[in-house]
Length: 181
Image (cartoon, rainbow, N blue to C red; front, side, top):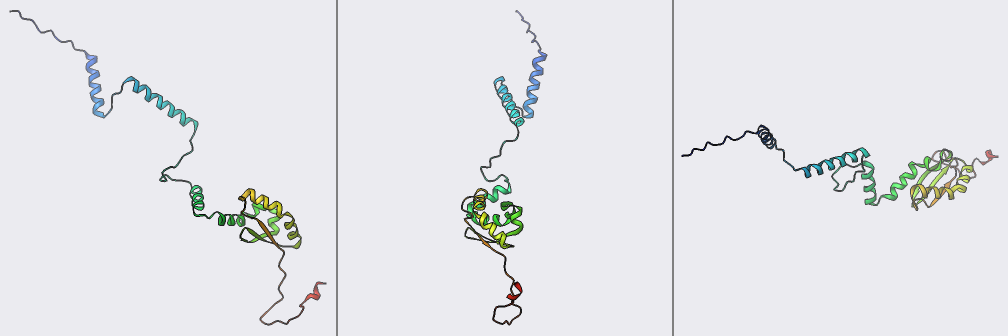
């Protein structure tokens, strides 16, 4: 009888520790990846860091669910509903000083905007004449700032004469013209 003694198995402490670490990683939910996957993941993270260093990229909103700026939303609503000309009308009246300059705006005010014609009242006949002479260059400037075809004509009105009608009754006649020399 030959009795062979069983060979004692060698105990590898490093392998046992590695196996324990793998088991604890699996218990935490970590997934084991090979070296190729690790390299690609590292390259991807490096590319993301480089992109972040470049600065924020323009955000593209495709699905309509992300928040957008009020200017973009308002501009799209105006364009979709065909309100471009009414908004341009308000733009001419509200931006009058910016469009014509401080000197003209101090003496001439827009009264109305009807079918691409701006009606402007001046505080003196001299300014009314000056605005009539400048109307061609102002129309070109309006085309540049507001878009072509928004304003096609400027109707200039001089100062309003005072009314001498006082009360409910009046006498027909020339009126008080003798005081104006």
